[in-house]
Image (cartoon, rainbow, N blue to C red; front, side, top):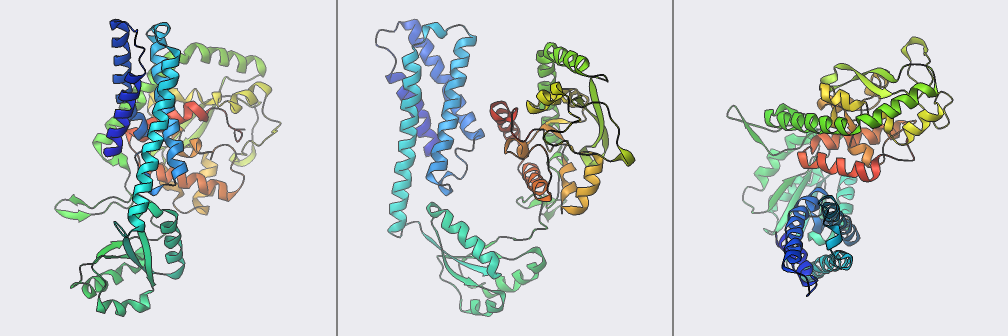
Length: 437
């Protein structure tokens, strides 16, 4: 909260300090409105870009880069608003540039100072926590690496223990230490004896399940009919409120976008039609929410062809089936635009795991654990995997595995703000990509 407050003060103070002294009252009022808008934009955009999300656990360069991207986005949005409201000519270009640079440097300075102060405090022994790890050696090593990679979190691995050393806990641990149990679900029965051994000890105890089978949502325990429940594999869309929010987001945005791009889509449809014989749209059965099949639309980018036995061959770089105009559509992702019709129909979402061909689903569901968990949400036009570079041809099992990991992370962490962040990231870097085929 302190950093958020300092960011807001930076936006307002730097902006107002740079307002020209000879500005008229009307122009000063315009600058004041711009700064007020920027305060709200800063709170929203900075949160969308993860600027405040566990920032002390991140490397300094990563934090400074996030601040640069988020603050630059805020200033660009304000500049766009000036243009849209036709007041851009009244605003000093020098003010806008100096406001961006001054705000950025001050935000960077604040964070560097905080990092330095915390580093000094922890080197002096303040706000420092010793951790004892209990689990398999390999898991303990990975967690130790994570602790070392986040020095500003203030943790220090003091000792590593295995399950055959549990009896040593009977002597207790220092009250200011923490014990992290790095046990998989299959060894959860060891937890109660450990709790009993430490019943007379004030040590903090945490369980970090390390189990590749734990592929879905980790959430705090909740009340279910008076019983305590922990959601392990539950779609966020099982909550009626989330379902309504997602549906409104999809239908409203899809209707607005289709209204705006319909003339452009007509031009693309004409290009598809004259570039090769065949229908404008390519229709293919895909698996959607809960694995139910639907017919997905795309602008046709290949010559009309058939494959034997329902086989679906992924497009590759230089694929002879792709038409020249189709190559342009695929490279720019414009072939995906008809899927906004699927969104309006309710078959898809704007943001979600990309739908795969039925044949690919049948194959990868047997090769990758948790693959079908992708269908706990509606498939999307764009997604967390796509904006992070995992798009296009998946010619190896490892590539598909990474895409699935990102898809499941999205489902586990879904929120309206995450969807907005992905949409913004798609606008800035998601349309044209070297992996698009």
